[in-house]
Length: 297
Image (cartoon, rainbow, N blue to C red; front, side, top):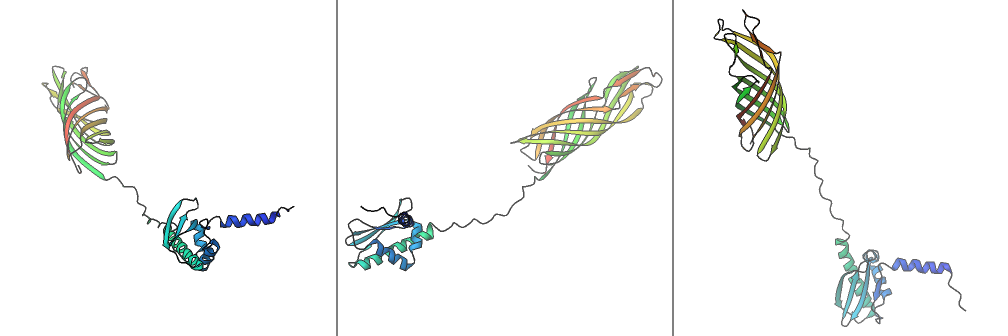
């Protein structure tokens, strides 16, 4: 009765098999010349055994009068084959097979194992800063305060960057009249201010909205009265304006609407009849059209 092999012998055999599982050289069944051991010995002499072990396996076949070597990767997938003329001597065949395997392993190492060159580092670039843009325009408008309507003219200049605007607005109205005693009282405003706004651009259309505190000069004058002199009143107004226009050209037509509120409130009266008082509305609404010229299209 045979005794089972000692466990340490089985372990050594398993270790040797695992070591040779990758990089194995096999010879086709039935062919004893050359032997796989002779081919491996020649590979070691050539110093290619370690490199070949990273590649996979090789199967050597003798197909008279040729020697064929089939290569497979570690998963058993075909990598390619080499066919050369076989010699008659077994030792020469082993040396020839080893030389073919070493040459194939060297070619594979230059391609499959070569690490791809790292792409050149691209310098970090700061995010692009939106350019400054400027715009100057003129406008004509209709104005109404709830009591009387009239017309006016204005000018506007804008300096923008990204969605933000810094705007300067100056405008004045023509005289409007209200009954006062036996005649009429006329009033008109002239004002200017600096404010902030936002702008959006869709394809060729732009829209903006601006809020401006303004210095307001109100001129009051008598009409068809005994004393038709003019009186000036200074105050402050908070004005808001929104525009929509064509933004595809440097010359930009636009429509706008706005409203303002003035403090302090004012009224018209007669010096000889102080009981006659005509209050003036602090609120004015405007609609109009304009044309501006931009620094960039």
